[in-house]
Image 1 (tube, one colour):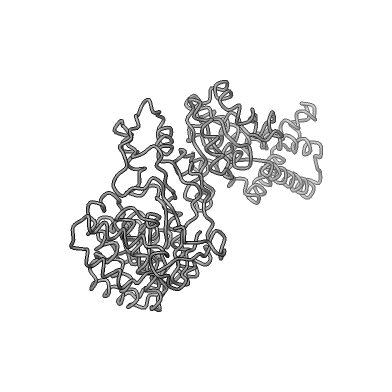
Image 2 (cartoon, rainbow, N blue to C red):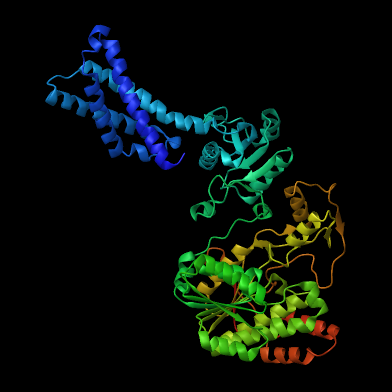
Length: 612
């Protein structure tokens, strides 16, 4: 029924109710012989007109009555009361008589019938009278707090979700055995499996946004002991920004199970740094580079220059950003290779960006082991080209994306990142541009991460391949990594290496098992095989060298420590000299340079290592 039809329906129903209430009141208060001598038509007409005047005044015909509550009942009370008073005044002025008993009885009957007509709409919606209730899945909500009741209310109102809430689970003893929104709180987490079986639950919805990752893991394991599907309410951040609505329940994802809380950053500082400025991002089509562009767009720079080598990926992120922010921000694309030094200098001088985020790099460890010369030309010399072009273009801040593999590197990729860090730190000493680097661990969902590989192996029926059962890695999400990069730009004084304190490392084997469970499978369905460690791989990753000592806190979760530098000119000469040598010689040279310590190289002046 469209809005216009609803309005006329409500108007007609109210008119019938008013006339009926006058007739019932008259018949019940006067003998039948006297009923027809009373001015029923005049009384009814007066009441109908006055009622509709006040109904429009209180916007009774513009309310969504399927969500009616006490507030709507008060509106009905006011509209009916004032219409009765006005009718009484009209009778006194024009008829010189007021039928008080008729009006009083009419007042009570009108409130009862009009309220009933309106609240019946909510009753029909809440109880699915006009829908197919058989298709709704019995749902257990974990968490009877404000978030849980919000989910329950939305699922009750919106039957399109296909879920029917039947009970709550909550560890709060004060709530157990009580009813909330007419739904019982049937017990704590330890009784979850029992209640799923007893109530015939099809779906479990976890609705506790304050859960830390360890608590979520505990609840999720309890859910896995049942045959029910486990889902979660959307994140409050997505609800507030309008990306999703409460009833859009989502599946539990691997990022939800990481044992590390999200990082709180100083968004005001980032906005002050970015707003109305020109920003350039290299590797803008990659996983990290494209997310940096998305995050930057939230802070309204005047222009973002998307620089990348792959035209398809650059086109994709350009179209996405134009669709979301095209009316507010200018997006410019530059197809360029960071090895093309001349073009980089031309681009920097043309756009004069305030900040450069350097995300372009070769990151795949085994590929760089087999092609070490490419790690040199792209990761080292490419970084040098971008950095020196930024210096020549009077860029205010240059942020290089590094890796935890740059710490005590055992791979060509890690060594190339470490040497690139050395270069930008050295350039910071003699440039007006502030040069900093940011180290991350592994990024969930990036094209080179294990998650897409495991998902593809699961899709094909397995097996999942892992190099070693004790292999551990630090993990973070792409948005968190990108926010860290932006925070680094706003905090940069020059020469720092920013490192995210990413909590406890995650075993790759546990990650694979969680992915299997999230896919509704087990190790019996999809096998797990160990293939042996690959060249350049480490069993454990690190975030800091032993001599990068934490010193003082400068920001929540940010510390300053000490590092050492080498003679970068000599380092770059060594790198240049070995570039055309045998692959094994290149590999050995890079690792030798990158693993120099204070005991093997003269320590220069203090620099910074900041841990977020």
